[in-house]
Amino acid sequence: MRNKHVIAMLSLSLLFSSASVFAADLEKDMDALKDGLSVVKKTSDAQEMHTALGKMRQAATDAKQSTPEKLEGKAADSAEIKDYHAGLDSLIAQIDVVDQLAQANKLDEAKTEAKKLEDIRNANHKKFR
Image 1 (cartoon, one colour):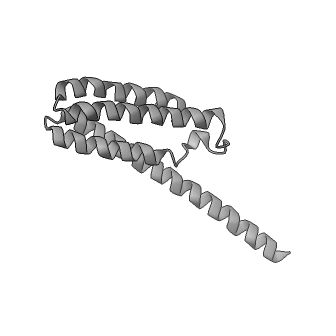
Image 2: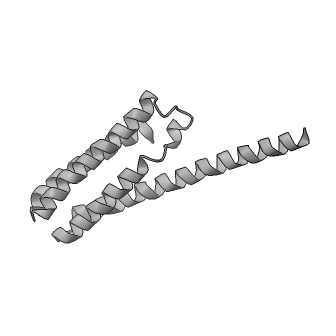
Image 3: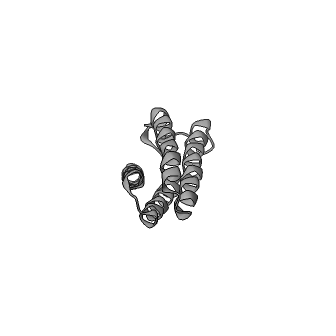
């Protein structure tokens, strides 16, 4: 009986420690998105913009593997989780639009389209932060 209690306690501690690891990973991804957007808004170099957008795309894709604290405990197929993933998919699609413009060396148009990245971020922060 004592062993069952020990196993239960270890399982709970493992569960909570992995939840904090996911939160740390999500925070890291969000920081990468923020840093990349800053570069995109300020740079006048197409290659630098392309590189920053690639890092942003990678971070957004990775963020889909994590769950925001506000949604912890929700089922993977819940409407809230699906909405979170849809927000990230929307962000990734817009990153791709901006990146195509950057690769075509259309930086002014890319920066105009990058403003939509902020709109997507703000809308999703209201829901999930």
